[in-house]
Image (cartoon, rainbow, N blue to C red; front, top):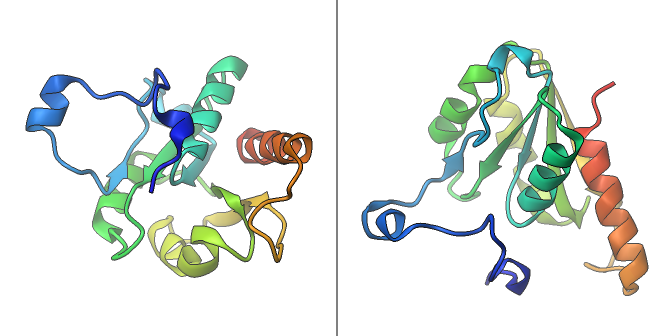
Length: 158
């Protein structure tokens, strides 16, 4: 199932050539032209939160944060993710960002895989909603505030 919010999103499009001749990519590296040497943080994510992260990073004109998408969580594509992260072997600050609460989603079941693919000695932390018994808060204003907070948490480099 995919979210309808991306149905007509201008960034979530493929050309006819990509559809006809392309292939599924289990991991997708940074799409903007960033100098890998200038990157201080790598944010990994899956799903539609990617577009929120990308739009906010572009709005902030941040050149020191790379975003890597992991499109397949099971079986985990270790090699493809390692290849996407390879330009950032010098980075020590890695973040997994997700919309789901801490006790749900990919972080809950896959963080051991994320830890296996980041460079040895690098820090990996979570940016997302706090643990919750419910998958959603129930109030749009609270949801939007939480969404902005998790995007800011993932992108802000101190």
